[in-house]
Length: 79
Image 1 (cartoon, rainbow, N blue to C red):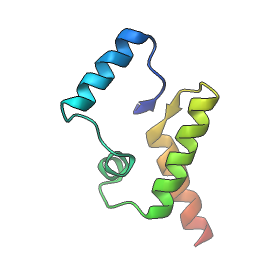
Image 2 (cartoon, one colour; image 1 turned 135 degrees about the horizontal axis):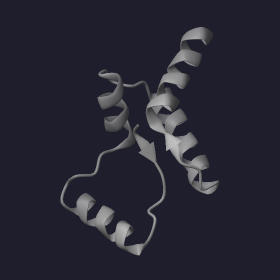
Image 3 (cartoon, one colour; image 1 turned 120 degrees about the horizontal axis):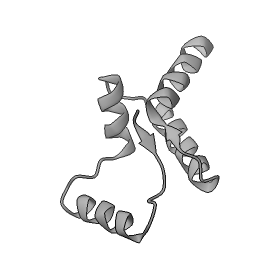
């Protein structure tokens, strides 16, 4: 599972920040691209970013792969 959540504590937050400083961070677009093996649309990136923000506010753990596939499925049905 590719999950998204807040750091558990200050130590985990510090480790995440150090990883980002050492170039290990990725944009939402890059993560989506790695999952779907294609360049994501602007709309997909915006939808995923919005859902991540909502999950953060509600302190919810988010399964990113399931979310992305769900959004893609909805976009396909609406197209």
